[in-house]
View 1 (cartoon, rainbow, N blue to C red):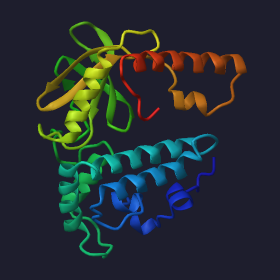
View 2 (view 1 turned 45 degrees about the horizontal axis):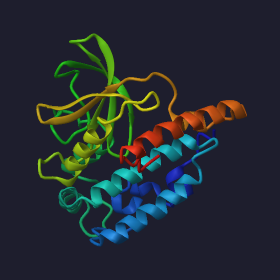
View 3 (view 1 turned 120 degrees about the vertical axis):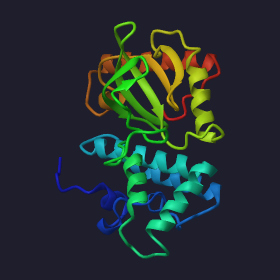
View 4 (view 1 turned 180 degrees about the horizontal axis):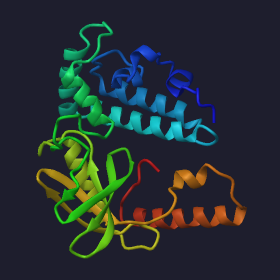
Length: 258
């Protein structure tokens, strides 16, 4: 892989002096765009550009930018999150001046990257968790998806490893984001199939909503798809995914980002 490769510039034409880009810059939108339909269209267009590179030597960069675009869309299409983000953005970059963001915006950008800023304890709305989380002991981060961060944890009551998912964004009880996460919890709790992940429980610890699932060790689907494999093995993999999705569809659950 080319260590000098810059996906922000090569694929999205975002110059180095605009790093990290705002959500609007990432989606190639005017700052503080208010039209939700335009925001969704811009995210769809950007995602299509990035998906062209999902295989091959730059697959990792493609996955990271896909997550960035998903987070930008989720923030800007949720009215409460967008309002808070816009306030912070105006404070950090008035007008079109490319000034350094003040601490409040730096803190927000740290949270977007999945880490609480230096000197601040984790609290609802940030995606970094304390080591002790209810009955679970957080061991490490497994990855990020469109809606949140997934951690490897140990259930101290039952002595087993689990995957804990915590949502990004605005965790206010009235937020659309939190309601989407609750719908995901209810939907996945219906699953009882060898090709679908088992849900153990959903709950809340000190204001943090979470979903506890079975921890399945191995490679992600993205890692499998980024390398050649024998035809029989590929067919077996696709069959397992199809069986799992068929069961989900039978239960009325649609996996929107597969």
